[in-house]
Length: 631
Image (cartoon, helix red, strand yellow):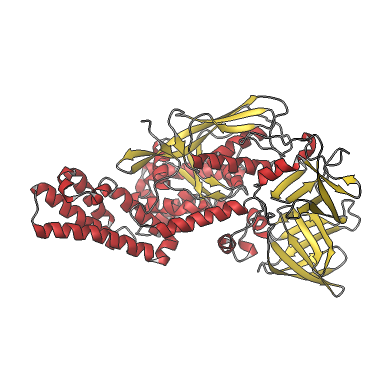
């Protein structure tokens, strides 16, 4: 059997009966998939945003904005702005549906939005400036300023049909929208949905909802269908139009390959080969795993000229990795406002004969596509791990500690992990000290752009200087570890942190130098440490007593010794769980050594196994602890 490499680790709670946790996570994933096309945020995602504008980055603010609805008074009438999609806002009088109009907008900075009432700009630009409390704003149309307040959130909804969004796109190919004897999508050449050159001007953001754009990016509209798909409303800067949907004669839906992106403008390919480093985990047996680096590469081969480009792996991958690549494709289509055509893009791993799975190769794959499209050269000494959403946000993954060990052993100089996985780096520092971070420049990234800034060869001067400065200070620490606590080294590390706030290695070494490093693992780090310590003997807890003589005494002793060393380093709430495992391992070792056991020892052994499960359930039932684990 070939070894299966994973870009994720085992679950953090393999011995917990965590059915409620699984269902909670499943519900979150399903909801996120349902909201992905419309840009809708879950309540959990809304609560996760900073509560003040001053704490937000531009990308974060742009994501937070979608779905918000704002209200103000004008000439005694209530008016509203609803940011329906990342590009389109709807202006309305709540009591007059005919007044609804759609406009393009853009965020020019955190809290600052601009758009025009008309493409010819005769009435001047509109600007909305959001206050730091994220609850109020000021609207300025160059003639008058007025206060605006946030009144809530709502999102575009799919119509009640069994169609998915891609199927809705195929259905549109066979239909026309007519209004006052004009054909919106049809033979008169005005925005023809089934013409390749026009298709990029439309994006189905939900089943029954289309966002449109003409050649002028400031002219954007929303087309909203009735649930029976026989009527529609067209909202645009010139007002409302209604019409009917009819079948297009002689037109059949063109089915595009699942791996291709239809409905997108053609964008050129500037490179045909690129590579970047990835981090993965390798199973070692006994439910243990180790980290490993692997070079990922991408090639672009010319295919049919007018066919949408396809992208995929040239080897067996699991379902999670396939879904992650689909999300990467969506992201780049949005990022570049289009997708390559006439190309076959293939991604392959350094070890291309072993099956792989997991979502954390997504950022690496996105960097490869970016390199082909823009021509940017990637640093061969850089590696990255992380999942990616279609909005460009980097999401956390598992197995980070093992991956960081693999990056250190692999000789790579610069690595990036998701910002939400920084706790894992802290746990590694608690467990192993400065060594992993002296030789590796570890950064955290929250967005794709942050990952790209690190991965590219032509980094910004400030970032390049920070990397050079850390090289110099780490060389001094390597030659003389005792220098870490000296004022000179502390000052140099502080300068690196100031220049590159997401430099995790510099931050952790500075914390060690200033004696600020915690003495215990985090909640999730504690569980992962215990999980690895008992991996070799875990399955034996389910073994019949008559089979205990087949247990390896050496494995039991090694696991018990590891647990005893870990006990003082794990979260205090996990210590009873560790004690239960230590007791069980000690009793099992006695039974193996004696080749038999008196009844009282047998009862103690059974009780020790029950205690393991009981302590696991206590942890699962501790909501505060589990929130920390899943954070």
